[in-house]
Amino acid sequence: MSGKQVLIVDDDEKIRSVLAECLTEGGYRVSLAQDGKEGLRAALLGDADLVILDLSLPGFDGLELLRSLKESKPDLPVIIITGYASMQSALQAMKLGAYDYITKPFDLDHVQLVAEHAAQRRRLIHENTYLKNELRVRYGFDNVIGRSPQVQKAYVLAAKVADSSASVLILGETGTGKEYLARTIHYQSPRADGPFVKVSCAALPEPLLESELFGHEKGAFTGAIARRLGRFELADAGTVFLDEIGDTTPATQVKLLRVLQEKKFERLGGNETLTLDVRVIAATNRDLKQALADKSFREDLYYRLNVITISIPPLRDRLEDIPELVNHFIRKYSEDTGKNIEQISPDGMAPLQRYSWPGNIRELENCIERAVILCNGSTIQPQHLLFSDHSLQAPSTPPQIEPRTLQEVEKEHVAKVLERCDRNQTRAASVLGIDRKTLRNKIREFGLGTGIAGSNPDHGAQTHR
Image 1: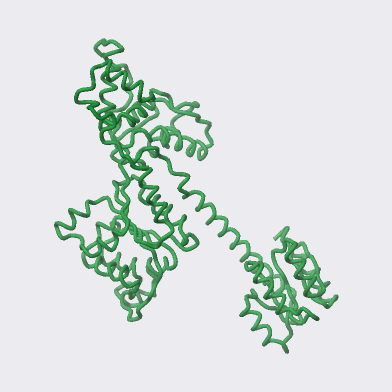
Image 2: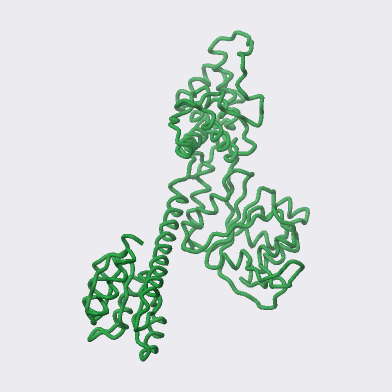
């Protein structure tokens, strides 16, 4: 408790003195006020963590001071001093937001205990506020890594819908960052102060998933020894994220549909209908249109979820983002491990841009984390990189290669990059680290125009931003 500030407001000098001595011994810094107006001024201008306030003050009484404090500093805990004869006023004060009350004559041990609990509550409120602000910063649209048109399109759309309560369906392969996007939408929305609750729909069989989503009453099934609140109930006033929604069964889909339509549900084994205020963000790596065609996913639920659809591209289709992502992960894991790794060598970056990344950003992050752990210098080298495809490993001895001219090697590399970039010259130039004019010159020099660059230099390019 050392360093905590308490303000004591009481017109009785003896009570002020006794409380001041008691709390000073408990590690508090104490300031004093003898009437309501002086107490209000001290509370507003000072840095009190706690106010102990006598209700029976002359003129500007304790209840008036309490109202003023709750209007200007709602999270400042106030402990009321009262006598047994004025318990009705103490109860009124509790309704106005007082944290607790102590009665005359004082039990000084009790005073210290109540003060400690009040100060701890304020500390938790401040920590919670700090963490929420940190989450807003972490999951900010300004922190998005990616220059590719597809990524920019996804996050521009997400920024537009964040302020609404519309359902959002996020599509993308495993590891592309669907959960990160869902959290960003939540923490940049008016619901940011509410909970973000994730449910992994593919991780649980149907009976357990239903209980996880909607909760259950005691005795609802074997093993239900107590009431349990479901994820929807826990997410009230916030956001529930239904990950891998495409793996739910038709029976669960029916209940999800009702929640989306009516904002109502019952716990398993219960008769009480509960109403909630929850935004639903769902995600899947499955082709839901195919699931509709083969009747494994309900069409009415699909259209309820599909108010806004955001697609996240796989990493192999956004090669120009790899260097930025790599540098981000190097900084992150260098800080986590206490290492001073500054960069990755060009020979190390090259295989990262050749690899197909079946695990997408998650696999890339794991690869860089391992590399940081294995690297003892300041620069990550090819030998520090481990891939699922072992054909990309740096060989222990240089392979025997057929001698070729530098121009032949460059021509082959430019042709491969153009092909990987769907013949989009803007993207290919970015991957190659050259400008478009230089790339066009190389296309003419190497005779790659026919069937590679085509007549449209930005074939396949996205025009949106």
